[in-house]
Image 1 (spheres, rainbow, N blue to C red):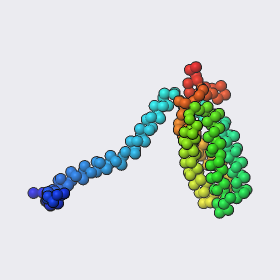
Image 2 (image 1 turned 90 degrees about the vertical axis):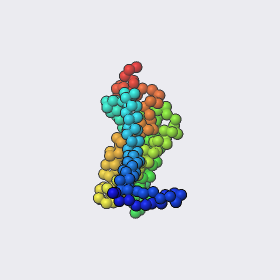
Image 3 (image 1 turned 135 degrees about the vertical axis):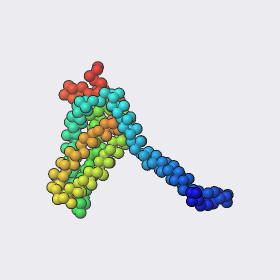
Image 4 (image 1 turned 90 degrees about the horizontal axis):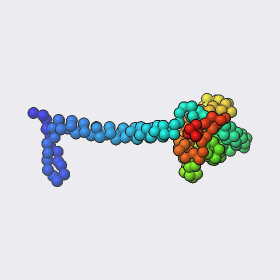
Length: 210
């Protein structure tokens, strides 16, 4: 006979629980917990599928991606120049003596992010997305970059004694492509471009078909 014990249920009634029924309860509870635990993963996979479908719909091939990345970097040369100028000014002003380079990086990146968003919206992607919506997504991407890159800046300069200008260059290159990809699909959806994009006469998106 399986060992049994009595438990009091709601209403004062007693019911017997065997080891077998207890194991069944644990199994059911574990399955439910597993479904809950894997829910975020299913949501992420669903988002990935959606992005892939969008890429296919606008024919965003690796070649066209690189053409757009070149456009992004052409505009980015101006943006980075403004960013570097702000960084140098803030570094010389020394707004936070205990963390001089890190503070200059963070403030310069925040200010230049607003200018960069407008420049990419207007010139790089010629986006037709609502500007405030685009700006919100842009600042979300740039804000994430700000947190990650400022942490990297702190480690490089204050923990590993890397020259602050070398650290600036490392971080600028490290986060460049990831920023481009997230901005393109969140802040400047290719479906909302106002006109076909070209770089040095090479078409991107559906310009080739026109």
